[in-house]
Structures are given as C-alpha cells and as structure tokens.
Image (tube, rainbow, N blue to C red):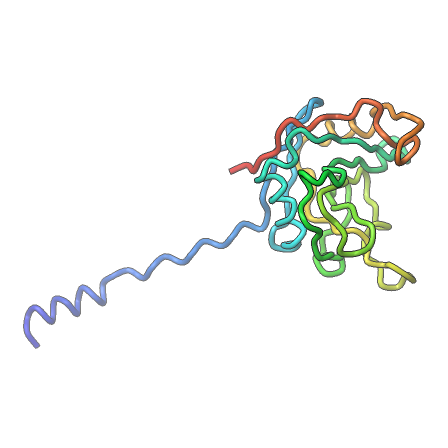
Length: 196
C-alpha cells in the first residue's frame, strides 16, 4: 500500500462520528401577557401533538393577540376554569382538529391544565380553557355512556397561576351566552409567544 493510501486510511479511521441529532423537546413554553399579568404554559408537543400543534399555530400566527378571557366558571375558592379564545371569529379561527382524548395522550386535567374547548369530538378550534384545581371529570372515561371522550388537555400553566386566580375571580354579568359566567370586563391577551 502506498504512503498516501495509508495516510488516507488513517484519516478515515480517526475521523469522529457525526454528532447525533438532538431530541426534540417534549414541551414548548409559551408566555401569555394579559392586562392582568403574565403566565406561562408548557405545551405537550410530543404527548398531544395534534392539539399542541393547533395551539402553536394560533400563537405563531398571532391569532391570540388581542383576544380575551371572556368566561369564568367558579365552583369554589380555587376551583373551576377560565376560558379564552377566538369565539369562532372567521378571521381568526383555523379549521377544526381531530380529537386527542386523555386516554391516548396521558395529559390529564390537573390543576393548571390547558385544554381545547369543543362541542362534539373533532369540532375543536381556537377556544381554550385553563383548569383551576384537579378536574378528572373532564378526562376521557370509556366506562361512561354516550360521548365519553372528555376534553383534549395538551399542557399546563407552569408560571403565573396567580394571574389565572385573578381571572377566575373576575366579576361576571347576568346575561350572555353563558349567564353568570361571562366576564363583565373581558381580560385582554396582549401577546402570546414561544419562549426560546
């Protein structure tokens, strides 16, 4: 073997193996600034990929900027849920997505869970709820009759739960689509964005 070929063989053997591709993160953090303060949600991009991707489209396309928290359902001191979203505004709403039940994703309705609102399964679009307190009744339960698929939780609040408590306790008005649950002065989302 010539000296040049020997050196080439040595270089090929000594070359380091390519570095493995880094694994995609299991969650994506989103900062949501409201006129009552900031909170942060961790979105489960791997466990609930369809529902998480839908929410991230609303964030990335700035469809949540300027919308409001418009509903609060308070069933106790720190128990209930708050709701925000596009309210079927045709200029903001994206097409509905396939339902991901909690039995499939393992993402449960625990305190701070963020979930997508729906009517029948497969109708969810751009309205979201945040649970205050553990709410297993919102999870899928195949032992129940009828539509037992629950709601699609896809993440949870990891910072700023005090902002959610403030929204939960916001004064409501008697009329509206959900009497006694519609926030009298809806709380504005100023900006929502991924945290890099």
